[in-house]
Image (tube, rainbow, N blue to C red; front, side, top):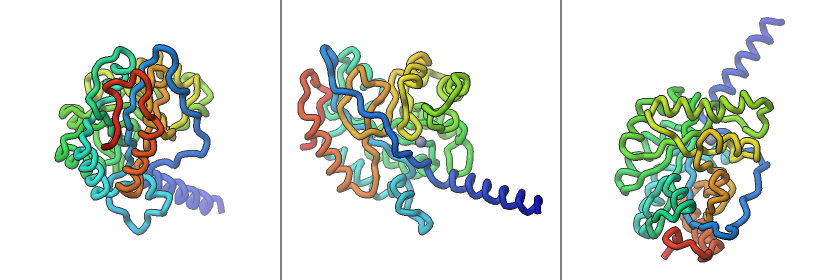
Length: 285
Ligand SMILES: [Zn+2]
């Protein structure tokens, strides 16, 4: 009886590990509210931050929920083609920070293209398209997943870094950070993960993506102390200020290019032309 229980448990754990390898983690319902809009002397920038996960064709086992985290290569290509046609230029998170902190110039229509969770499908399917359309992107590395089935290897990550892609940190084990009880454990997720990526790529890592889009004041202040300049959540929005650099909003990409065009137009219309937006302002033509 005991042996049967152990066998069942092993089977369940195996299935859980498999499904974790195949599917991006789910986003829990609770999120932090967006950072308030610009205050006195705070330069604002309208920069859409696109958030992608897996880039691959759908398979029959993909549920409707799972498809939320998958963009097909055809969809990604039509989106990159759209951005190129509209005159967007890809920028890094550092460039966005330099603009809102010091007014360092941004291109007329800046966009940040970001990929989470180091899925190998990004390396295989997205990178050739980024090269084809002349865009760079930021790849947020979930450190413990590197080298696992369906994930990139450190060699591949180094290759992306060498060709000008930005490598960011997506923590060590992809937990919901505000739920972590001890500072030691939180430090492993934020500080040790940063150190490990830096050891692999040989230079500082300054951008972070919050797992599940979840953060609170405690985790934000640890990220700041660790030396992160920016951290991206998943709350929707395109307008950024200096005060919100560690709680950046983004646009999760799903379903279709029409969906991107609509979402982008809506958010850019809402963002309007905030004072001081200067070269950071981007609007669809
Ligand atoms: Zn993630």
